[in-house]
Image (cartoon, rainbow, N blue to C red; front, side, top):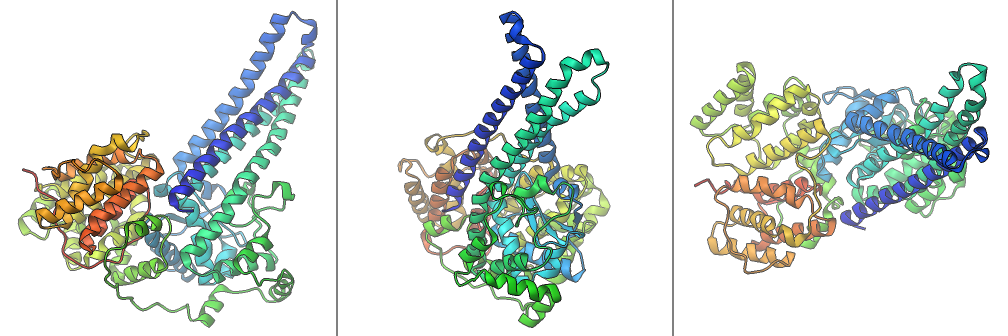
Length: 640
């Protein structure tokens, strides 16, 4: 199952959730109407009166459930994953943390984020939870958070932690987070009815009023808790299969089963298991890596632990858990001790980034949301290629904004001066001075490391105050487009940052997403292919040949003229709202066609790689970093 198929399955699951929710509401409405019928003796009233009362009771019930569900979902959506983490006692892990255990966790998260083509999420720890568990929460990848328990940090070695984090990234990539937030909203709506019933019981007033109100109030309470049982059944049914898929994705991503299987074995062997003690643990039970509370099999949100281990380790014998439990009860496992024994505790050596020829289009499409076997090592090599002092600047809230702006400053002195003046006018002289210094220091940075550096900087950047983010977002495009000759990297960086910052603040894309069929998106596809062909091929004939090869993959009319837009960056800005509205299979065709354009000459350069990753990111199709031939960036066609 590829990324687009998994996305389709998530949408189907969301549709099933809507229907199941509607069914649960109908059952509850019927229950409440029955209680109202008995309490108000509607059988002895005129038919018209009885019908009006029953309709009013039903509408009130639907209103309470629907409004509560909508408000809860909206609050969770606006708060992002951090709101869910804090509600359970989560403590944020600073991007620049120096604590060894937290630094190890953050290193793993950063490597997996870059390897999967996703923004680095916010990171939280539940320090007082001894069980081994984790979850991912948020509405979009730009406001996602990964939460790990203190028990997971203490008990898991690096490979096991990597397997757990990869499992949670699978939920982010596949869109499970949004489904999980909707589940929380649904359950909140149903519980809201029970809360209303308790309010009626506690404030029913005089004895004369008590008679007709007690039974409906009791019915509301009973219906609310019956609805909770129904909701838990829905939650269990929706989430169990997602856990199997996340396990499989984590293995495919890390290319080893021992880490994930080891983490599951420790859950089964350590006394604390995967239990959470937080009062609101039930709210996130369907989001967790392991079962947060003991429950009947019918209400279990996760497949049996033994079954998950056996799928990863066919030779596993369930009796092994008893042996491990006896050993770990006497001497609890230590992840850091195991790291030292496995040789994983010291800093890894930098890894050279190998050059490669263009991958087949089908291979690139298959890698979306499915990092290849070398992606994790490649991402680690990219991170280790960034100087440590530069990484430190990217992780600090007080230095991240100058660093990002410094990346965009031109190497040409006159343009650099103009950009400095613009920054000073918009953001103040101190910030412009700091950006100038960072630009000087970053001038010699390998081009292949610049986008990974911005991904590394995203948590610290997105944590800045909203007004500051708005100001930075507003100035990004002005800085890179000051002279009209936009470098590919400048466009990619400013566009991706602007989009991610908008989603981090507003929790939605910068444009309204409207569904569109591929034939109607033809002009946007042609404009995109023409720009990319012009960037990657110096000769007009070669660029046109690449353009036509890409169109043939998308099954568009081959007679479309090859006309690179005069204002390339404006043309690209106009294609994102159109192409993001395509269905998954159509997006896959566009990416396949774009890969054909890029690889028509047999080589993928850094500029082409960044454009391809930018296009995929703008279409919400995360593409791992490609191993590319290092070439100089080509400017987008200048304005005439």
